[in-house]
Length: 345
Image (cartoon, rainbow, N blue to C red; front, side, top):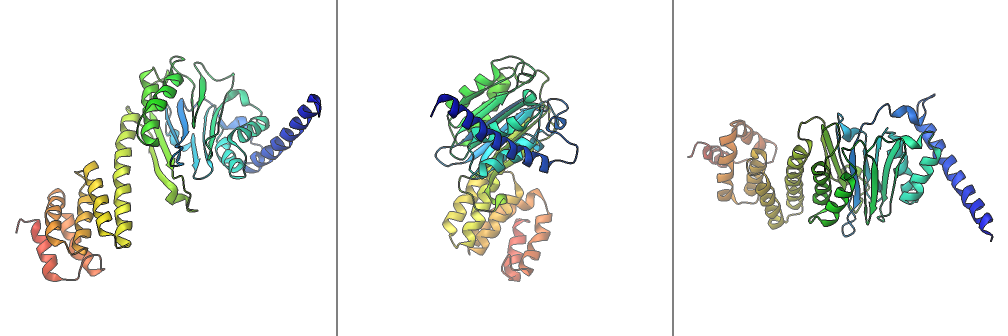
């Protein structure tokens, strides 16, 4: 086959893909709406899309000087891929990018199809990663400087409206050098971006989404993290606080599941891990105590009840109500003993 024939066939192939993508974009929009109408002004600055090659987790993390960046930029689906759509943002790249990858397209194929179908690709900055870790990114030549992206193994970093052109390289280096899980490494990339100069306008919001590497078919169960800081003078600091809290609640949820499965030892390991992360959280302390009672370990529960009651007396009021619905044993003497723990009886 001649080079000309190969090029012609490739062009024909991409024309078909672009036409299909354009049809999906048109069907997703209101009548008269075009892709470039989505972005009036740049609403996002720096982000990372990434995959953990060991666990298969996929994620997007982003910070911007724009309100509620997490409602627009990050798009992630377990077993499919992740998209960051930014600059003069068109959210269709998120939804349709996932649609195309779910249908079997690579990140590169999906992005190329959508750019071909877009009337204003020069305004876009988009990055995609698929479930196999293949990455693709685009920074249009009408992005406001400093703007650029860098592809790496299992990740892409991208930024626009930066103070300087060292921001996205700093993100890549930080992600590649960081230890810990995917969330830790993506947070390291965001911190590095800010330390290198960040958004020329400052900072306002941040978001992080991470999904499991093993999709359950129930998207709400696949999200390991789904966090947004919509408006803050220190969005990355607040995002890190929320990550710690989410980790603790993830342990609590795992503990509850272990209780359902009659694995008390595992449940207590999970509850203790949660308590170590957020020792002052009265609710976690309280439900840990409830679980201990239901395991028959009343003596161990009483100090925990005492701690929860000291923070808020409403936990005392709640306790007898749990017995009425089977969440604690229906034993008046036991309930009096638990409530008495709050008085130091």
